[in-house]
Picture 1 (cartoon, rainbow, N blue to C red):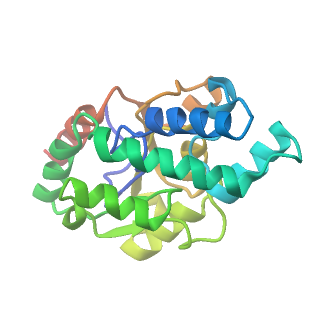
Picture 2: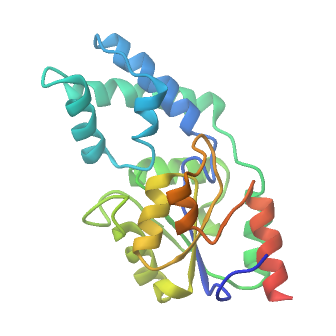
Length: 222
């Protein structure tokens, strides 16, 4: 197992890849929607994974109707989500091992997330990971969110590494589309979404966890 090129930098998604947050986000969304008189099921929620709020708002309004108070829902959703994060936020398997491997080979890295910067920094601080990443690219740092390539292109720019030499790690379909559009090598590590044939065609590999990513990088550096 290898990659077309040895990565000169690695760009990580955050939710569902570094942190086990997507199940918490879904749970919070279901509760918040019910409080506002709506129902959200998993098939619909899965289409929102990897998107940022302005895009999520448009999709939810189209799905639930013009009577859906998106901004009010968002406040309630974030309140429930923050409460769940406080008690149940957990690292995904292999995060620390992979970061140690990247340190050992002096490979720079960044986060490119659809989440708000405040939330991203909160999650990183909870696990003392702030100094393990050279840049954190979040909402407000780019014009268009995933599946547009903007978050990954901004990460490439901040890292000073051409997109073709960057390895993107993603758990979502929208994230893989964004990384591929940016011209990066992409590996999917599925969380709640399994890859479709379309998504597999955009990936260099689909791996089980970040332990396998660490093994791949070690093999290429040996």
